[in-house]
Length: 109
View (spheres, rainbow, N blue to C red):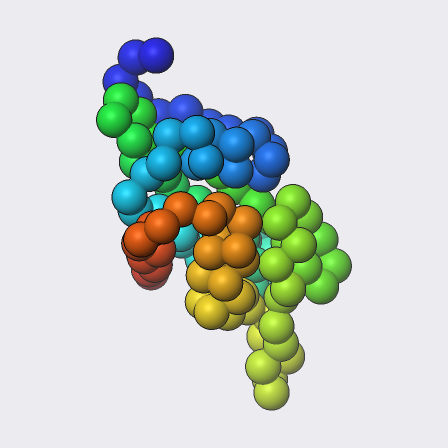
């Protein structure tokens, strides 16, 4: 594999790669859906940096949860939909059982 960025198309493949490659850090980004008129924070980008590449997986909302991972989408008092940091971290820790895996959030404006 050459240096660069690899887009992973399914959660199962991303999980398999994570278990196989054993990264020390995983980063997630909660993103606004640019096609949504309400700009809900309903998309999840997972980034795994390994020796020769960055592996990136995108998950999008479908109803009240994310399509591939099933992470729930919460709603605040004003009706804004969003993903809780603790739900992402809990999901990753239970699905990718790597000792001392650091899970970091990266916020974008």
